Image (cartoon, rainbow, N blue to C red; front, side, top):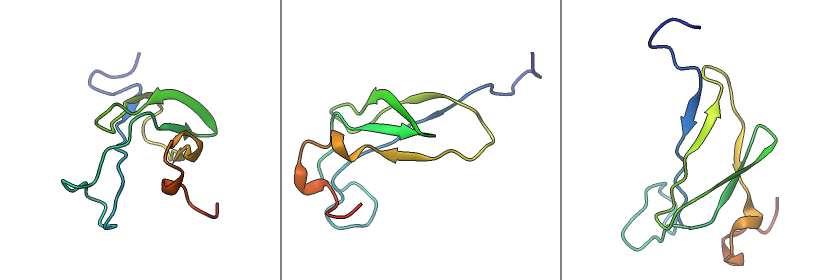
Amino acid sequence: MGPPGIARTATFQPHVFEDVDGDGIQGAAEPAIEGASFLVDSSLRRETTTAGGRAQIGGIVPNRRVYMALRLATLTDLQLRRLTP
């Protein structure tokens, strides 16, 4: 066991929405995206975003660099996907 108060795992809470104006902040007219999923350190994750566009991804090792990406194939609106990878 580690020292008390030291987290053994970490949690990400990504927020996915259509950023119409590109400012990185969800405005009133920018809808949340439900059903989006993620790739974390080359692993497909089963967690998906809720109707509010939020997900909770646990089991992450703290204090180390993590690669996380939105799985574009899970976006149902094809216009939200990039034209080039």
